[in-house]
Amino acid sequence: MTSTATRPRGARARAAIAAKTLRTDRWWFAPLITVIGLTAWIAYATVRVFMHKWYWVDAYHYLTPFYSPCVTDRCVDGSSHFGRFLPDWWVIPDAALTLPLLLLFRLSCYYYRKAYYRSYWLSPPACAVPDGHKAYSGETRFPLLGQNSHRYFFYAAAIISIINTYDAIYAFHSPKGFGFGLGNLILLANVVMLWGYTISCHSCRHIIGGRLKHFSQHPLRYKGWTFVSWLNVRHMQLAWITLGTLALTDFYVMAVAAGWFNDLRFIN
Image (cartoon, rainbow, N blue to C red; front, top):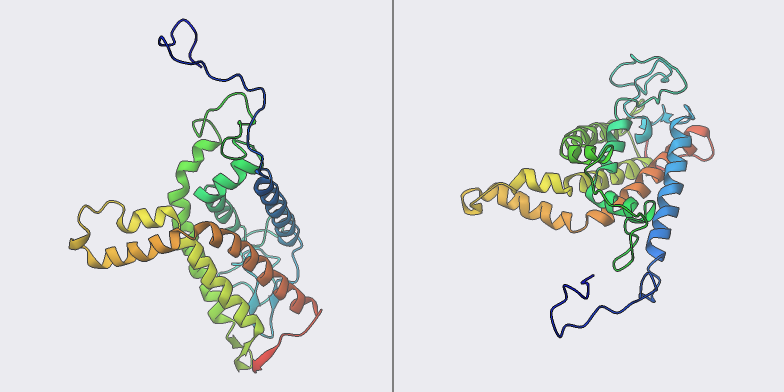
């Protein structure tokens, strides 16, 4: 605020407003919904990851993405496509190689930063609403310094998406031969959405065309950059959609594996 001593002659002082914000709309609604949604998903995912059961349907080769790839000694026969080389301690997730990387990819995602900064940390909760903290240091201190590693987690997420694609294709080849059911559609739709979220990442957009000076000299990269830019506009929606498809896919595989209901089969 400009003081009286330094304020130019004739300039008016700022109004003394006691209220923290003059917004009268429900600015708090979006942060609240974000907290509820993310907390519910995290709670569900945490329970499922440490259940250590109902993740593989041997009859149709369905493997939930929460357990892919399954690499502990606890993995049931058929579910481990890349070997079992980690101990079966309860605290070790069966997909211990991928889950931490996916978590870091999402935590450092530009959209998710905005989501949990505004909702959990209230930093700030909304435009024209004061920050919930007295001091602001941005991403200059630990652990937020790690946010700059997002570009590297993108490469890991891309590799994991390839593994998820393999799982979805492998599920078409059941012990009875080629098979096709509702579970296959769910696994396939989840993979498509995961690819959409992964390649719509800001880092992917920069990798494809961010450092090009002349698009005309790189027509293929320009087309790729244009497509990724189109997806990038929808990055927020894809971030939420993939949380939904991941939970739906996991729940469906769990339900079929637990015998709660049978898979709807179209072929075999």
